[in-house]
Length: 197
Image (tube, rainbow, N blue to C red; front, side, top):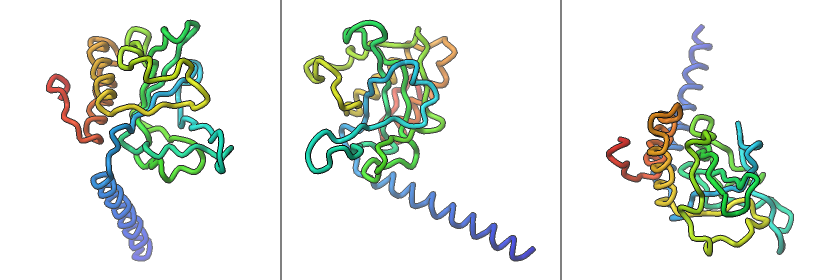
């Protein structure tokens, strides 16, 4: 029994040490001003994502190898967008998820941004908003291109989630979106809007 208890204590100690290292890394990590990513993804593939693909490098010595999402960290949100059957003017935000709690883009070798198992959701039709409300068209190429994601600023992401919170008031998704907003602000060390605190 003593040996079994010692093994249990050792496992608990290791877990605590890993969690302490993770917290320290989160606290000391340098925050990029553009660590949020927008994806073009068909709506029928957006539900229940475990990861999103980063695509491959298109030229140079790394051609064909998975693209390294170096700015993506546990504080990054992934915005899922789709045009539906319309054109680029109809692009809307269909879902939002946070990158995995222990995902560090610089260490990514397989070209997959792991999604957080708790903080992700597909928005109901009534809670979707236009992607172009937050971005100038000139900032993005006319076509989405061969790179499946685009980086954008943290403040813009906070505004998107906050606006979705307002849009979702009184709907079934209200609490889930507010929780995502609180988590986003916490991991990005951003002040929450008092209305959602």
